[in-house]
Amino acid sequence: MYQNIIETIGNTPLVKLRLDKQSIGEVYAKLELQNPFGMKDRVAKNAILAAKESGDLQDGQPIFESSSGTLACGIALVGTSLGHPVHIVTDPRLDSITRAKLHSLGCHVHVVDKMGAQGWQGGRLELLHRLLEQHPDGYWLRQYENPSNPESYTGLAQELIDDLGQVDILIVAVGTGGSISGTARELKKYNPNCKVIAVDATGSVIFGQPDRPDRLQGGIGNSLVAGNVDHTLIDEVHWLNDQEAYAATHVLARHEKIFAGNSSGSVYAVARWVSRFVEPNTKIAAIFPDRGDRYANTIYNHDYLKTKGINVELDFDPKQVDKNDVVHSWSYASYREKTVLKI
Image (cartoon, rainbow, N blue to C red):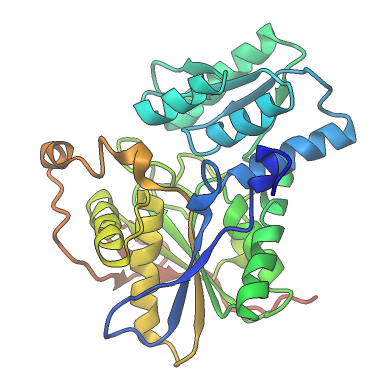
């Protein structure tokens, strides 16, 4: 029994995956998609409550944020529940289902009409600054550098420890960097040798690749490097292109019966592949951020896939590269020398 909808955020299911006959390690999917709207509900809850407690956010003060949709619903849920007007700045990639959710919650949605110097993210931030000039009482959540973002995932890490005892490998898709940084930092307190694998999209700048704003994937990758990305925590990076990510998402639905978005599909592909090259009983935690409903007209629409020339029936394996190589298909690289975090 919960007293309100905000209390339902967190404590999501952990499911052992079927994988395939080649798998040796155990992969456990943390179904963050089972939050009311998705994984970033945790960020909205933690950041808004922390801002209210500190006095930075006063009762009734409007909240502003830039989001392609993943965080937007969480902010709309928590913010409006607590009596705050919520303004979300987004771009034309926002799907109709997420738009309907935001409007139904009473959220103000502002859509940019062109990219900025740093892709759609840059265009959104430019409009956000103009809106804040018009609303000087507005509170900007600042998901890219707000420390409440990674701190929101301390609870997720604790849930993994409670269920598994120890995590040997953590695999997370990266966008703003909050989930991978916050979860990894906490898990390393229990296992300093926990290997952290970041999953990114080709054409994303987070790990030094050139920006390709025309990439189709949402919910993963970025055209700017957010302040919350703690590169020192990351041991290995995998990049998947649109076709590979979409194909993996379909395999995830067919084989594991998990209807998810492409960030979850990409993480699944990497986790399944990694599980083939580890010692028996290795515990691999894979974070699945959001469910597939917002991708009904793209990833799960065969006409859309045909138009984009994407074949989801293909299977792929990665190639190892130097971290400074420019990649166009599923590739992976060691990102830093292994160091042990001092506790």
